[in-house]
Length: 133
Image (cartoon, rainbow, N blue to C red; front, side, top):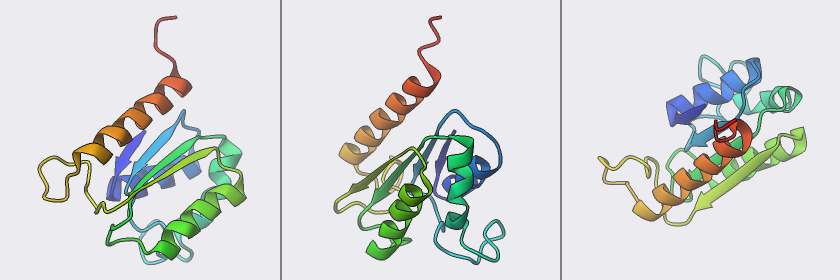
């Protein structure tokens, strides 16, 4: 499953509820905030142990200049995944803002977008295989 922004928020939640082969989260929104419908009363991030229990690998792709996350938020996401034992990758792109993957936005960044897509394909290939079986 691949989710971008609010879709990343929903994909994170889905990974806490059902076993998924893999999840790639492009700048997932509001994981550290307790005020969304899926995250009450605690931030959605508090459910990370459920992802570990379902053994779903997670790839998080964030921009360092994303307005949704402070450095402390990014550290909290990384720590929550690590401490819960979630198999994960975590990439922060320097000088990169929210929406860096969308080539129709002024925040698009070709280099980070290409790198993030290659990492996503590697994750999916590793977990799903090539389909040539």
